[in-house]
Length: 486
Image 1 (cartoon, rainbow, N blue to C red):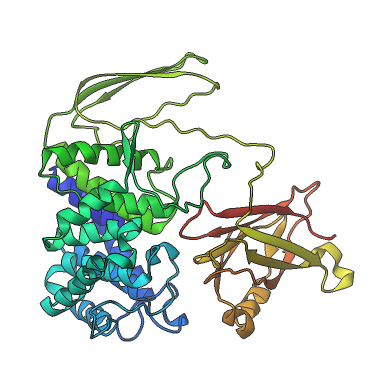
Image 2 (cartoon, one colour; image 1 turned 60 degrees about the vertical axis):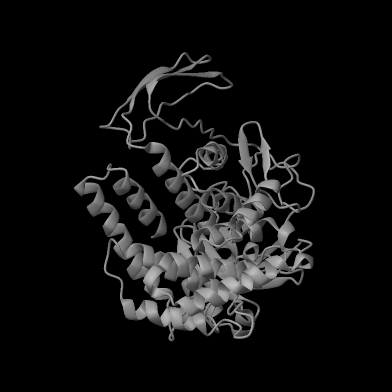
């Protein structure tokens, strides 16, 4: 829902949205709004699994409230639902300090920052209150702002060295117009990595070692904090536009082939930041560009013409032979993004120093005479990270060709109270892939079983694959192949 809001806001503010496009995007926003209400709980809060969770999530409720407030300019949002969510958030703060109290499961670990989730959650909530405008109360804003000011002035708190916290604070103080804004922004700038014409922020304990991974994109949390760094800049100042361009270029380099990122929060916040920057950069200038791309190996060559009639369309050329050198030549005036996306298969997965998850799989026939016709799979997963627990994690089981998941066994699994106490939330079936959602994985192994049935016999079937990944930091992923015992 949220990316549609940011894209449409950008297109309208730059005069590029026609009626047909508006209609299509508004339809997407309305659909997202109706789907989002499935996760609403009695009392006005929201959580990742709705009423299936024990209580609502503070940070997720703040995010939903913010998105609904931003959507209200395009669709009808029930104001009573907004007020209920706001009231629920108000009850989730410490009356004495004004700081937010984390309720529900914080499934996104990076939200806690390196100091405490109290600081990042309070800053996140203050941003929501300021962006939600009339839906918030002055007292609520004042209380949360005072909490952050007190923590910032407490030099021994460690907040000034925590990149995630500083990035959120800088954006929050920019929105509120607080006198500490420039001081926090200066501190954020000191924590930045500024090299090769690019600028970004990363955590000292980044989980991606660029010397060990086969191909590295930045972890989700670092995309997110860098996006907040861009949002925190006052782009009415020319010098900040120059700095903003460095950040925007780094964010663009982390995008995947479809324009998104690894997960939900990083995609939403990065797109919000890029649309904010592009709106300033666009400035209504005329676009008349000719871009010539040529490949040395296969001799492919294509000329792209970009003008007002097609500047919002994706144009592409395919390069069949590699390795190759691709030369790009651009003439004219305007701004365009050129990406090269490589798609390839590798024979075996490169080894890494330490797998984030340990996965084990067993299989057997629950009824001996059925043999391969019915098999029970037992999957065991544990987390190897030094920080004790993952964020929300998904076990993705790609079934062997010819097999499908037995729905009766999956329904039985979903009612297993012992497994639910261990954090199992739900399952989803998508053709021959079954996804199992867990609150988190720790060093203590969790096992679960389900049946698969053979629908047709496939000669020489390839092994199936089991992938376990952190939902909010998808680069934390472990994969193993498996075969059935029969």
